[in-house]
Image (cartoon, rainbow, N blue to C red; front, side, top):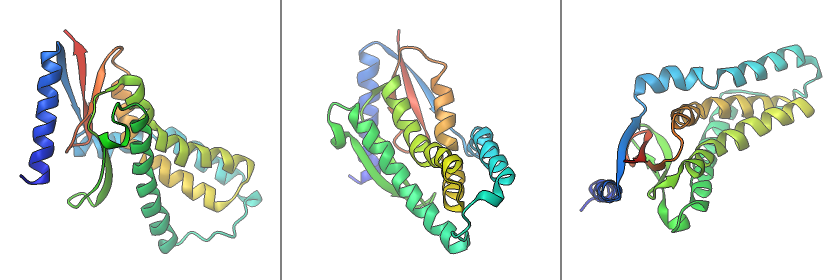
Length: 197
């Protein structure tokens, strides 16, 4: 059995188990259109604050870091890998089987690394794992930029805040619910929410 079929089978088994335990399933898959529109709009307030601060304080910035195409690609690739690692490690804290419940991989069709949690989590655990890369790689560099103005922190925060647009969108979807279990979708961006009947 190939990997994808095995993952889908495991996912189906989990869905059936949750149904048998009295949960109602609600899918929250983010479409490409929504990801492109809302994934950019959702982090925009943070991006605007960062850019406005940079423009107003540009003269006080340490400009020794030159932002070119090569540096952009390096920061982007390294950030994306660390971003997914942070998702996985954070989710594993809330998993019964810890890191055994986390799968790391690379989606060739989307040219993106990913972290997937194979275990249903509490809303709190899933949301913390979803938002942790945004906080560590985006917000912390932004706050550090306010204290130590420099180009590297500016570009680091912009790239990582923007990269977390889909995660912020997922967090907004999660806010609709109170007491749920959340299962990361194995193949699509999004999750399945389980509420008690």
